[in-house]
Amino acid sequence: TVCAPSIWQEAEVHQDYDLPPHQQFLPLVESEEQFQQRLADRLVEETTFTVNVRLAKSLPLPVENEESRPRIDLVVFIINLTSELSLQSAEASVKCLDHRYFLGKVSFMVTNARNVAAPGERLDAVRKLAASLHCALLFAEDQTPDGVTNATERLLTILKVAAGLVPMTTALYLSNLTRGTALRDIDQPSFD
Image (tube, rainbow, N blue to C red; front, side, top):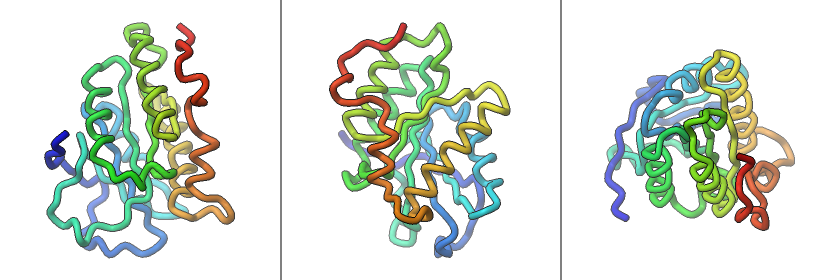
């Protein structure tokens, strides 16, 4: 797969990529941007530490400023289950990530899982993708302010661990705890 540069926007603008240690760098990847901006807005409101959010439609990230880009603490793929394009974009983007990111630094956030228009096979495909990569699988309600707030809180918890802000807990350990599906359950159908 050829990984062409992606579109890259800043949710919180920082001219200097030399971030202090209390600032965490978090790319949100979503092909359709329906939920991405609302989630980014909530994440940058965090007060106990600064979350530096970048928005991308796909990966890889653009090559300009690559050498001065800060360490990426967590990559979040947002997948809208009502859109086949959203899943395909995430699957293609995952291939562009360095294999070291899958050690607790990648999460999948699924929206519209309760929507009757979302095929069960698509949910199964996301579960298999997350399980095969040993990544956290989160479900989010993106239609209500409370849903966005809950999704933000869950992401911040994972980000704190992935960034090393939680003593005696590593991103790899968290990855084992938050995996969406046990490998032995991967071929089981979803609860449709």
